[in-house]
Every structure is written in C-alpha cells, then in structure tokens.
Image 1 (cartoon, one colour):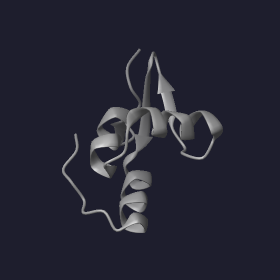
Image 2: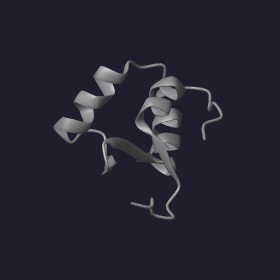
Image 3: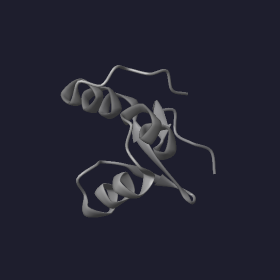
Image 4: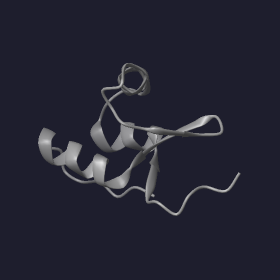
Length: 65
C-alpha cells in the first residue's frame, strides 16, 4: 500500500527527535493524546505535529526523514 503524499514521520523517528521512549509515545498514540496514523504495521506522525511538539517542549529541532 503506497503512503499518502502527506509529510509523515515514522513514530520511531519522533522518539529520537523528542528524546522520548517508543513505549511512552506509543501509549500516547493509543490513548489518543498524540495524533498518529497507522499505515500497515507502522505508526506515523505528521511533520507539523512533530514540529509543534518540539516547539512546545523547547526541544531543538533535529533532522528527521
């Protein structure tokens, strides 16, 4: 299944960008706290959501795919 043409970042890369563990972010996805999309067996976060999280948490933006 091809991915949509929306700038998506894999959840595992979001973990590195925010300095958080995968299990904590995955839990937020399951609880509906972190908006994410599932494509196949992988979770993705929209790039603009990641950038808002980085700004809100005062985290330096790191390069992600």
